[in-house]
Every structure is written in C-alpha cells, then in structure tokens.
Length: 196
Image (cartoon, rainbow, N blue to C red; front, side):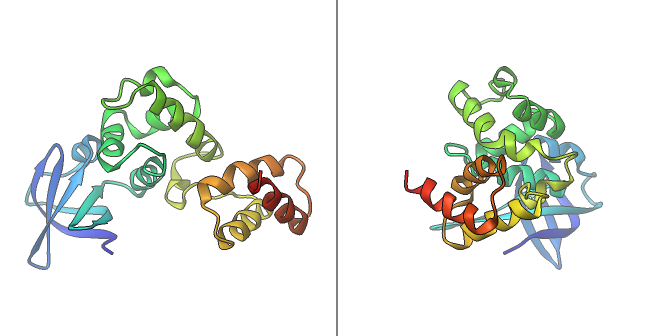
C-alpha cells in the first residue's frame, strides 16, 4: 500500500493532484482543503496517501496532513459515507470546524455539506462524536482516536482480537467504562451485551 508521496507537484486541480516520484506520476484525488494547502506546480510536495483497492480499480487519495487523513478514515467508517462524500465533507468545511460540528452534534452545519442530508448528519454525530470528543486537538486523529485510558484500551483490544468490529465494540466499552469492572469481568459483560 502507498502511504506517502514526496516529489514534484506536476499538476493541481481542485479535486486532483499529480505528484512525480522517481519518474512516475501519481494521480491522487484530493479535497478542497488539501488543494488550498498545495504549493505551485514545479515545487516539492508531500502528500499523506490512502490507497483504495476495489475490484478493477486502484486509486489514491492525497491529504495535506495526517490529521486530515485520520478524519477521512473515521468518516468512511460511517455507514453511507463513501470516499467521495468524505472528501466532499473535508473540502466543504475547515477540518477544525468539521470536527467541532460533529463533536457538538451540529446537524444544521453538517447538512450544509453537499450530499449530506439530515439522516447522514445525525449518523455522523451519533457514531463519531464520542470518538472525537476525547481529543484535545487534532493530533490523535491518525490513531482513530484510540483511548488514552489503559483499561479502556485493553478492553477494546481484547474484544477486537476476539473478532468484533471496532464500531460495535466502542459503544459497549463506553458503557462499561462508567463502572470500570476488572478487565476479565468487563470482557464477560461485553460478550453478554453482544448477545442481546
């Protein structure tokens, strides 16, 4: 997988950048936010890359910062939000504003993003506000907002290693965190909760 591109910026459009690395030109889809951060063609550029591999398609998405890429990774985990819509969201609002809107469950602001209706906005708030809520700044985004608390981290890790998806695990972990039982007891309670 390609994770980063550093080279000469050959071309930039509001939705696309081409970077030449070692004689090969890589085209990356980009958000308007990244477009605004790009230098002029002919200058050196560094893009943080997400590689998308589908049946008959390999495409690259380029981001100006690891935080923007981290936000993208969180957005596409929400059901109904694909790569195009996630890029549109990152381009429609500055990253900090987008995060504040999700944290604050500001559906009105989110529905101003082209392609995001009320239902999708509510889903973004519901699924991501807690993941973004514990972040002091934007630095933690690349790590998918992993918990700072060791107990929480251990429980989340144990449950995902048992094969449960992270989006299913996180609400249960948040629920159990209120009483914080011993780890083995927490795992037992979580497994019970999954059977409900």
